[in-house]
Image 1 (cartoon, rainbow, N blue to C red):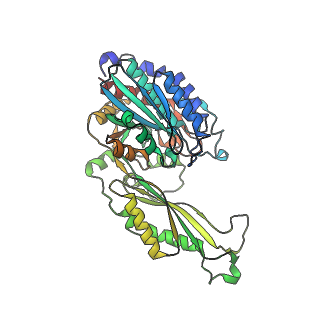
Image 2 (tube, rainbow, N blue to C red):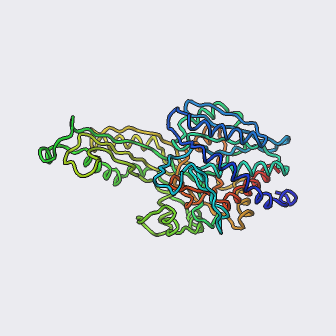
Image 3 (cartoon, one colour):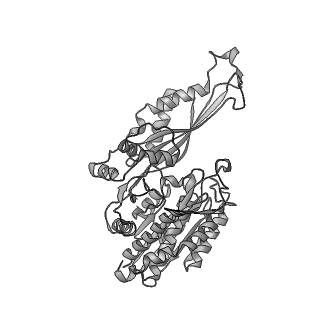
Length: 451
């Protein structure tokens, strides 16, 4: 950004708080919970609100239908654009169990804070409505200040269920989405004070294991020791999978430069545990924690069902059980190959267990060089006064590898959220300090790319 363009930028960003708060309130108070199906009754109002918001700042905005729930696509234009960038965010949110919240999850609250300026509370505030608004405001400021760039915003509505129909959006608007690069802000700094640029996402493979061993439950005193217990067998199977090698296939360890960047992130085990309300962890070594979260695959159990679930005890052997599980996979691993190996492993270990494969998406590695990466690095540096470090993400964004594959353009990340903001957790929030950084950084990125 030239000196002329930069003059007064931080003041203009600071003056954006009322705009940001107003629009975040509108979006958060629309309960756009991913249905995971084709029912758009809750999603559609949020997509319509997104379209109206983008149209209000002069963008050409439309709703793009899919076989599932719709997306919003909008383009903010400069009459003499030299570059075109797509910014991907999502308008859908995780379910919110109100009993675990200190306030209504879909009632927007703003609280003054001595360090963060304001805390904006409500489901979706940080994942991903707040960061999405940062990109919109940053683009508007940059273009109004003369940045010769077109910015296309894509707000998906099925990210939280794995983006099963996002390919429909790409196919329907492939020409409009063809750009120089894609920027995603749905990622996290590892610590509150060290800006970071994500360079990798883990992929995922979901599965449900089911086992039926009888036609009905039976008295454990009459059949115990003879009847097979499906809960016990699935627990044993899960332990066998945990100790197997097949889901480690294809892992490529990070090099020394990447590890050095991880170490510069200032990862704090105490902050990490507090942010996620973890009482115990498997290790407290900072580097080992980062390596396990970002660079190694995991096998996790999410729920087990079967048998008696009521109060007290009912001494039966259940007739059936099921186990929900998933693998987080790292770059260079193939989810379909891991799926085949899982099926083969289960078939050998317990042939009567049914494996129902769920959604899957590939890992992704972003470039750490080039014009866009450098623009993001310089923008975060200029906005925060600190040089950002490069890290990876433990989570997954199903649309990202799809975008890279189908559009053939690089995807970069400009993280804004913090661990304590509570992705997917009760009492989720975003804050003005991070929003201010986001707006200013996006404005600087667009100004650089459009110069």
